[in-house]
Length: 213
Length: 255
Image 1 (cartoon, each protein chain N blue to C red):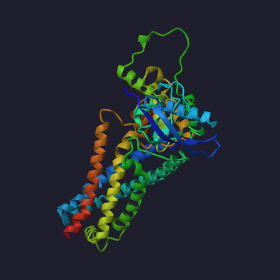
Image 2: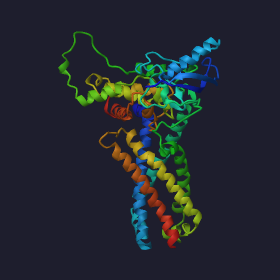
Image 3: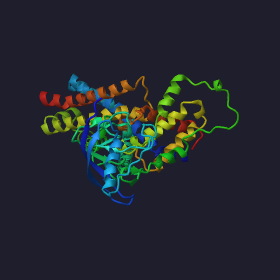
Image 4: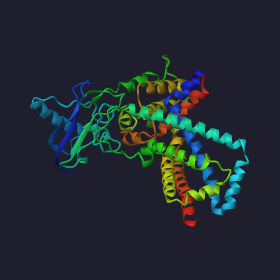
């Protein structure tokens, strides 16, 4: 098993774990968004989606465990890579100019990553790790998003996620070697489209609830 | 083309030796012909420094025609200066404006310690090549050339990668001081041709391990390397390296 440790402790190995977990999160948030959009069909539709999802029981727990493992890997390795990258240039440049490759998403990726962690912790405390015996998800949602502070917090949070994904999506493909002139432009455009739809989709829900409730 | 002259203010990194802390010093570059190259401009400044009894600015150079990979410095925050696809020696002064201030710094990376002024030790790139960036060829009579079919697109891609002159600008421009474009180019250059196949797996792993060991950073796909590369080498070569790594790790007996 020595080879496996050597593989994943190398720079490319670590980044490929970052890529696979990151793309995993991308598919998770897509499903999460599609599920949440049932709110536009009304309270009943949303609650029946929630109920169907939770009726999967063990599968949901397994998926949640998977997400936790992915998060630990993505955050832990991200931190290691970030520190190593700082150490790789002990003396900084006096003048630094972008040559044309970097984007807002790529420059801010480690920092947006940290902000997303904060956002997720608040999000879990608010919606996942609460006692739902005397209430339901729709009530929690509507109680939260009638408060303007939470509306702003969530909109900012999903914008940060979108910025992170705008770099992370195509970057994940590149890191696992899926860069080809045939489809790389498509992957990059899809990544941008995905991040915009993700941001707009998730941001629309608190706005919708705030304005209609 | 009409020749005009420029007066420039230079802020140049001066550092006596690797142990020295180093600092910026300001010089005037006067009556610089726009037909001069950047290095010729530095020559003019140095001649004046020598006449004044001062230590000239140390910088590396050799062919001065953009093919040897010796020269390189960061000018106003850009490795090899503002002109795309151009080495510092091929950068002409006509790309600058009269009265402009130029900040000239050495390539910065932990793996590239400054030796003096603008001269950095880039032998780390040689260490990577020594670790396996070659093919082994048996001596003897020349083999029949047509025995080894090479698809033309592969020979083109291999030649594109082989255009790398090992100047280190990719490392200098990378926000993480990663050498992935350099190594990716070397991997592509060799693995796309039949002669490079037998050692492909061992090469991918040993080049990667040497690169990690030498203290280069990790690529985070910022694409600054490809933007400053004087040979405009594509980051698709980095993706090929990433693929070769997967093949070597999971599809070969190499450990």
